[in-house]
Image 1 (cartoon, rainbow, N blue to C red):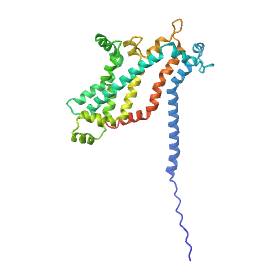
Image 2 (cartoon, rainbow, N blue to C red):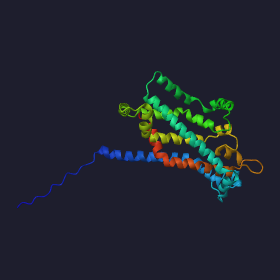
Image 3 (cartoon, helix red, strand yellow):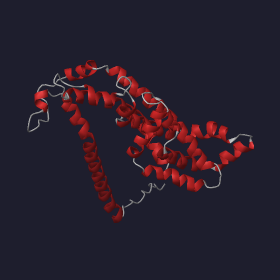
Image 4 (cartoon, rainbow, N blue to C red):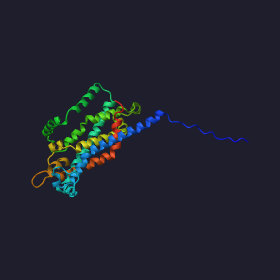
Length: 297
């Protein structure tokens, strides 16, 4: 009997070009990570400096040259920030205004974006260009005329201006929703029309559920806009109804009437934390919403 041996497959050699590409890819990945780390440090630097300032004593704050790390961290600055003013009441004002505005402007912008994306009408394209052109107007230019208008109708020192702004939609958010809705296949809309659905029902039952990433993106963006706004609450609201941003800037003072910088820094740190938490939990949907809104023009 003849004994047969299994044939071994020939060794596959890696082409020289592939061997040269691997070090290049690793080098590009390393450079990319270094750039991202440098950008992360750059963007996180101000917040880290704010936290360090909140832990310093008043003497360390005015020391020249400035010290980076506090010798004895003053955790009591955070306690003083919470007790020196009615912190929770001002925090509630900020949360209420931000939530109301974010909810209203998200829904109104979604409706306008749906109309621009799916409805047909004469002059729709020039009107859309006109809406986008309003983004070039700085908000500070329209603030005083808006204040005069609201003052004449008796809406100053109330929260109604934020309701009106929310119902008026945002040009940037309208653009986001319009881009997203334009990328949805027309077959869904046609099938719903055949089944007897009107455009209102199509918008509520089909397009809104599909646009959850963009809805969340819009809500987070508009929430942070109102949460971080200082000018409008300082102009439209009295001290009892104002937001936390105005309270932090004006109410933390020492016995001589000078700003208490370290306590202000502690209050500002607490003020930033809710937005950071919201963004950390929503960042996956936030990025998905921004990316998906640019799929189709």
